[in-house]
Every structure is written in structure tokens, then in C-alpha cells.
Length: 338
Ligand SMILES: NC(=O)C1=CN([C@@H]2O[C@H](COP(=O)(O)OP(=O)(O)OC[C@H]3O[C@@H](n4cnc5c(N)ncnc54)[C@H](OP(=O)(O)O)[C@@H]3O)[C@@H](O)[C@H]2O)C=CC1
Ligand SMILES: Nc1c(N[C@@H]2O[C@H](COP(=O)(O)O)[C@@H](O)[C@H]2O)[nH]c(=O)[nH]c1=O
Image 1 (cartoon, helix red, strand yellow):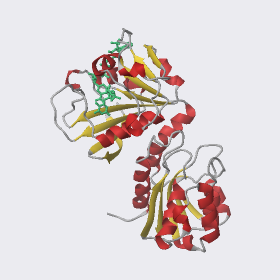
Image 2 (cartoon, rainbow, N blue to C red; image 1 turned 90 degrees about the vertical axis):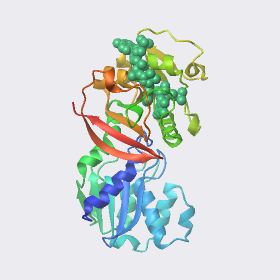
Image 3 (cartoon, rainbow, N blue to C red; image 1 turned 135 degrees about the vertical axis):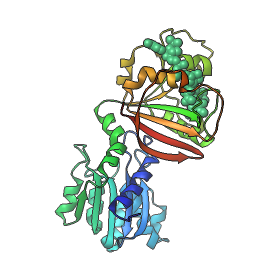
Image 4 (cartoon, rainbow, N blue to C red; image 1 turned 180 degrees about the horizontal axis):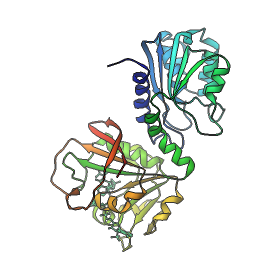
């Protein structure tokens, strides 16, 4: 394996994917800090909106590697981390290269400007995978180059684009993803399939989304709750895709106080929401395949008899844009190409 810029950027991209979609409405971003071209000091990511940006988490972690007992360890607030590093860096980052999947932000929002922080720490180089397209935050690279910091743009740009894509969609119209849990042999029914860790991840997603969509028959068969109880999160608004529109009111999902449930056959409704998760099987996938940006397949290492794709007339092809693990389950992110 070649230890080059792509190698370090891939570490940043993989770290960011661990928090993909959980950062809504912010983009998932990863950052790696490397000292003297070889020593990895930090592999970090942005973890949730309002929290520290990936660069800040990584610069803090990197500094702590060499200064483990400083008060910085206890500081969580982004403004205070910036302040501490600017005051105490003492040239520590001058022989460091920063790899970041998205151009450092150039404005003060809920957190301070990363470009301004990096500008003052004066690293040897900043390698950026993808430009920031956001009009408010863009041009961080320019800010860095103006003070003589070398920057390179475009390392693993395609992979960084796939990582950034949900954020691009949130900012233009809607990002719609289809989540399906299955066993190794493709079984999707019969109750619990995923591990507790993967279910907690699904519930963390439910806590973030603007709308959860599910098919009518799934509601009748599974009698689901569709809340975020495993992470003590909020129950999302639900859209039941249905022509028949008849459901037993005793089904758990209808019983959650203050949650809106719509029963409709109008798919245009999806576009009223910026961030939509569809929880469905193969029947619904056939109907919605044109509407979906990404598919998230949660594969549990089990073989179980049950319903799978064999009886559907699906003929789809995908590109795997990322894969990782949550507990024992594999998560595969797919983009349809046919
Ligand atoms: N493992 C997993 O991740 C999941 C598994 N499942 C399981 O998979 C199985 C199949 O589920 P799934 O593939 O999601 O599909 P569904 O079984 O929910 O069926 C699709 C539903 O979409 C509605 N529908 C179909 N065509 C139209 C239309 N033209 N206009 C409006 N509504 C329409 C119908 O609702 P109606 O009949 O009310 O008109 C139909 O029942 C279920 O047994 C379920 O238990 C489900 C979700 C996730
Ligand atoms: N069984 C299964 C899933 N099933 C989905 O979750 C719904 C049930 O949600 P709830 O009633 O809140 O537990 C069910 O209708 C179906 O859409 N999902 C997964 O990630 N992993 C699993 O193993």
C-alpha cells in the first residue's frame, strides 16, 4: 500500500462516514493531522450540528498527543478550543499537514471559522478534497493562501463528493434515502433482523430526519412504533404510502403523542421535506426506485428463511459508495446506476 495523500484522505473520508446523515443539516466532514509527513496525530470528524467542526476536533486531538495533560483536554466549546490553540500552539503545527474532506469554513456561524484558526496555526500544508459550495462558508482556501499556507484541492474529490452529496441535496431540495435491513441471504421480514447497535443507529437517524415514510402493508404486518426509543430521541413525522388507507388505529405508531402521521398516495409530498428516510422492503423499492438518492443496506451476519427479492421484478444496478460496520452488522451505501 502506498502511503500518500490519498491514503491519509481516505482515513478522513472513512471517519466522516461514521457520522454521515447524523450531522444534518450540516455536512459530514472528516479531518486527519499528520506530523512530519508520516506520524498520524489525529483522525477526527464533525459529529453533530452545533458541535465542533472536524478540523477543530482533529487539531485539538493532535495537540493533545504531545501535550496530554493540558487543560485543553477538558474544553468542549469550539470558541474556547480555537482560543486555546491560537494562544498556546507555539509553532506546534508548522511541520503538520492537514487533510480535510471539505474546504475549511470561512465564516463564523454556530462555531468559529476553521480557516481563521488554521491560518493562525500555520501548518505546512492543507490538502482539501472538495470545495465548499456554500456561498456563506466558501473561500477558506483563499484565506489560507493569502497568508502563504500551501493548499492542494481535489485529492479524492469523487469520494468526497459522494460524502457531501446529502448536504448538497439538503441545500437544493430533498435528500431521500431508502433503508433496508436484511440477512446474508436477503431475508427482510419476520421481526428483528439487525443487531441492537444497528437498531440504535437507525433510531439515531429517526431522531434526525424530517420525515419517515413506510408502505401500507408494512404498517399492517409489522404494527410498528417508528420512534427513536433506543436513543431516547424524538419520534419523527410519518408518511404512510397507501392507496387503501385503512389501518387499525390501535397500531403503536398512531399512539405517540404530538407526532404527525399522514396517509397518502401522493409521492410529491416527499419533496416538502428536506431529509427523508424510507423504511421499506423490495415491494416498496420497486415503486420508489426513481425517487431515491441513496440506499442504506444493513446486512446482519445471519441466514434466515423468509421474504426476499426473488418474487419481485426488480432489475437494478448500483455503485457501492461506502461500506462500514455498526456492531456486527455491515452497512452498505449504494447509489443506483441502472
Ligand atoms: N427489513 C426491513 O428493513 C423492512 C422490512 N419490511 C417488510 O418487508 C415487507 C414488504 O414491505 P415493502 O416492500 O416496504 O412494501 P409494503 O408491503 O409496505 O407494500 C407497499 C405498499 O405501498 C402501498 N402502495 C403500493 N402502490 C401504491 C400506489 N400506487 N399508491 C399508493 N400506495 C401504494 C400499498 O399500501 P396499501 O396496501 O395501504 O394501499 C402497499 O401495501 C413487509 O412484510 C415488511 O414486514 C418493511 C420495511 C422494512
Ligand atoms: N426489523 C428491522 C427493521 N424493520 C423496520 O422497522 C420497523 C419497526 O420499527 P419499530 O416498531 O419502531 O421497532 C418495521 O416496520 C420495518 O420498517 N429495520 C431495521 O433496521 N432492522 C430490523 O431488524
